[in-house]
Length: 199
Image (cartoon, rainbow, N blue to C red; front, side, top):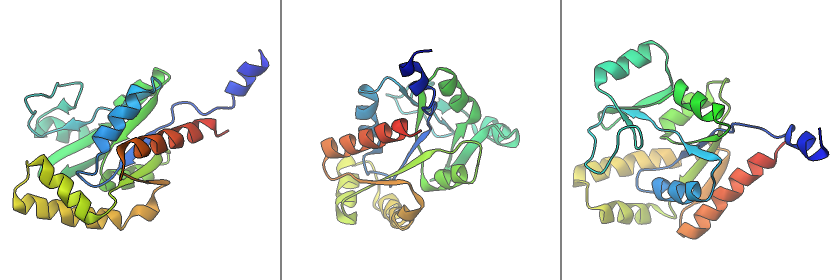
């Protein structure tokens, strides 16, 4: 074994990165930019009972299932975490995370604070938790308005959830404020590099 190979044996493999933050903060955009430049990362596809949007592909964006199938998975303890969000179920299957790790890649997951709390309580997974925050609640509200897809009632509910989520930042390993996209992507890439350099 070469010296270089022996160094690699000290590195952690299959590091599980969990990205959390309020709805509308920009998680998907930042994660997409990070995935484009890092072949070792693999997006962990969640199961959901919500309706598939026209542009979404089953097995790429989500695994779309009905409530009966989702509840069957729950009873069989096939989810590492799951949550009900705005009336629909979302969950991360154990099989999905194991599949990514078997490929020699690092799972990259986008979930809410509820799901992160469940993962934190599970000693078998030991993820790295990153909280993505808006520069202000006013800016978050502006971004939600720009999407133009929310009724006033739903928007107010999202803002209430966001306030509660922001109060739980101390539970996370890293905090990234998404004020400028390029900087937020660079900071997330720095977190990933730092974790991979740990012994």
